[in-house]
Length: 109
Image 1 (cartoon, helix red, strand yellow):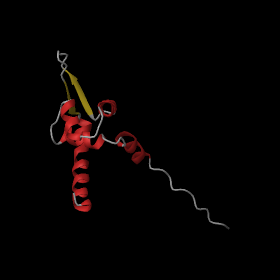
Image 2: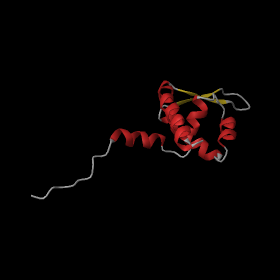
Image 3: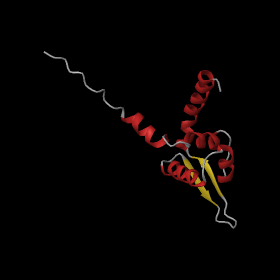
Image 4: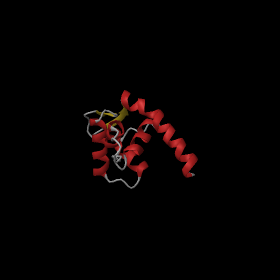
């Protein structure tokens, strides 16, 4: 009898995390909001560097929709909007610390 070699079952959890955090800038955005306490759009854009306004806006909206960050609009002129971590976002910060430490150790950065 021939032994079947099948494709391993896909991990739904990893797939879901990848879908949420797979954006080019999302981990960096979470790092700056979570660890550097950077809350304003302009500050984020300056720290990240190569990101366009539209990309930053899109990624922030997606992180907000996924429950990682909170957007607070002060309804002022000139407009003032700040971002902060939600409880879900805060619960992800130990993972970010580990990833950062792993990168420093293994990537020499």
